[in-house]
Image (cartoon, rainbow, N blue to C red; front, side, top):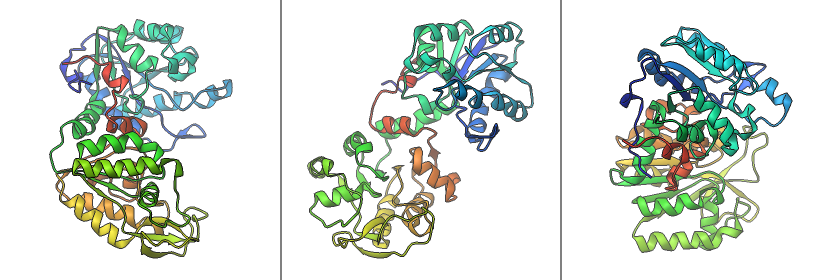
Length: 403
């Protein structure tokens, strides 16, 4: 996949109708936005298009829309209101249940240069997620230029990111997408070495292709979190009641062999924080102890990496020039079991390396634990960043014009 894409800096939008696909998939409670990070993140691209004299038509999905009732609760009207405040100018909301309807068409017709309108939730149209031609054509009929700034859906081929891009002559990426390509894409394709990849999270199954692809690209692969226990069991170690995917033991053996053959370092936990079971509630008090990773008692469960492993992983991260981290080292939502994840985050915060956090739980962990501003880049996409790390072509990226 070519990563050399045209961006908003390569085009002239003065007087042109610009459809900009953003990620406004924000959490709402009683019609109020409870976390506006995604709105704030979209502002630089929107402000650039306004300043350049474009007629800016914004679109996004919000949640999953399955029923008529969903259409009441998943409207983008609150987003238009908040965006107006953040931009300091009116963002007109086109309230069409069919998204591109009479309100949207009239609003676009009446636009002056620098005006902004927001279309209704793209998933109000059932064919959005199937990349149906009719909706793609409707969206394309509104614009002269298409800008995609929604990385979170880049791994999906939908009407509002791929279908419409194929129907307009000028399709480019916004600043958020550009940053994801620069950091995540280039970290995997041409990293500054040594390149260390850190993988955690609960399930090996979620990261099969990521492990295989990163082993070929990185110098050291560190595996922690719940997925480490399947690797430890594959080495014949006693893992007690820890989370294990018995159907993936052979796969883990293959990956250990692959690391060996390629001359790559593959680091696994050498000690483990154990308890009688998973904390309930998740952030409640829990009694723990630490044992070597090869001797977890039969009636105990591993829930975080131990102190020696924290040192081992931190030392490996400190030698790197590029670090990609995806997935926590333990049950980070629990204060007693967050130490492993904090240690890795601290090691990354202390290094001069380029540090890239691959969305999802590791992004949440970094932000919640106060390390967000210490990383070079925190990805805005969970599934999309994983597919980038797998080396897959992302339809939303591929659809933009090459330089």
